[in-house]
Image (cartoon, rainbow, N blue to C red):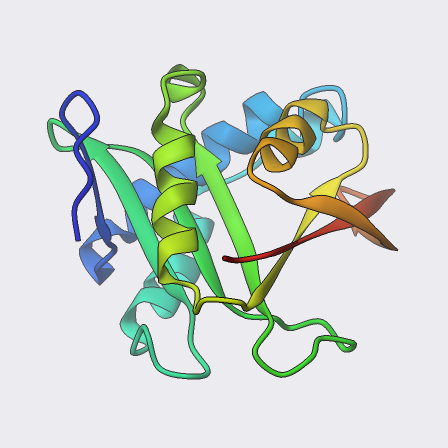
Amino acid sequence: MTVDLDGVTIRPATPDDASRIAQVHVTSWQGAYAGLLPADYLADLDPQVRASRWQSVLTTKQGSATQSHVLVAEQSGRTLGFASFGLSADEDAETGTHELYAMYLEPRAWGRGVARELMRTVLAQVPAGAEMTLWVLEGNDRAQHFYRRHGFHPDGVERIDEIGGVPLTEVRYRRAVA
């Protein structure tokens, strides 16, 4: 599957994409979470550490019932973003509920329609009628607005996660996939 948006291609990730996904992951966190996470924590994020995690994810067989799917968006050989999704890991998830584990774009790609196409591609791969959830940091207004535009809404469940030594509230969003 490929989607072309002004030369942007969306395709399944391979283990060769791990370092580029990790770089996008770090730069996106540094841009999106400035002001939400401690500046020293963001500055210390290491793409090489993330690359080894992504290498492990991507060498595990994707697409099986228990494994995640990872898509990358690229243009002219440059990775602009990625999305990772699969069955929900939430304790209260009903059978068949899917979860968007991560969706991040390089800050220079924000506002260009790349995230919209990534989301459309993800949603097209979720079985018809299946619910999908995701977690978003409270205060991440840009992400919350984006998810609302794609039919996700807070479902009333929150959790506290410690990131960079700071307790932060995450809000769960949910949508039924048509």
